[in-house]
Length: 141
Ligand SMILES: Nc1ncnc2c1ncn2[C@@H]1O[C@H](COP(=O)(O)OP(=O)(O)O)[C@@H](O)[C@H]1O
Ligand SMILES: [Mg+2]
Image 1 (cartoon, rainbow, N blue to C red):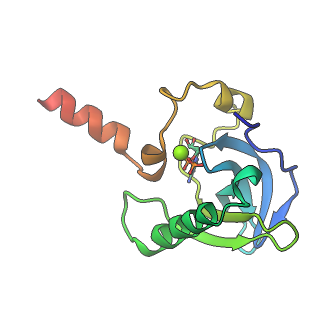
Image 2: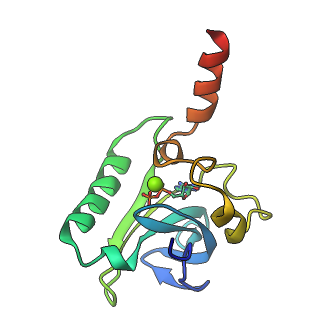
Image 3: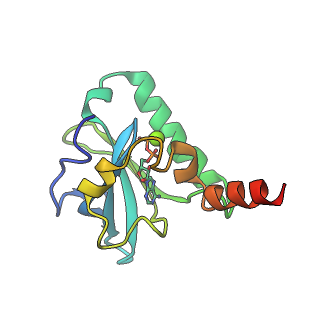
């Protein structure tokens, strides 16, 4: 897998300034970033450079931003911004930073070392309580 984010701290994408790498998924690297206009810490997903050339990938990424900003649900991560970097053409999207992912002790190395099966999946990363819901229902049965 490619490194979980090679953009240096201080990189600015739209209203967001990268603080540190957080994790990575199939589509992009996820960083902790500060939303400059509000001072709030956000999760910033930046598309993997090797995927940018394929228009279908870019469309899928834009879809994720649209869907995430349209659905108003406590179980879906809110998308708070999205754009395409002018210089590189790389799409990015900013989300609310989910709790439990932002502990200062969680280094990117630790995030990378988590196995795919034990780390949060695409689905659980977009849901606030998927793990809790699953275990609650399985213990109730
Ligand atoms: N909003 C978020 N807040 C905190 N961490 C996140 C957030 N979104 C994603 N992550 C972290 O980044 C990882 C990859 O995210 P994911 O949405 O699966 O990316 P991809 O679309 O590239 O597969 C997740 O497993 C999670 O650890
Ligand atoms: Mg994923």
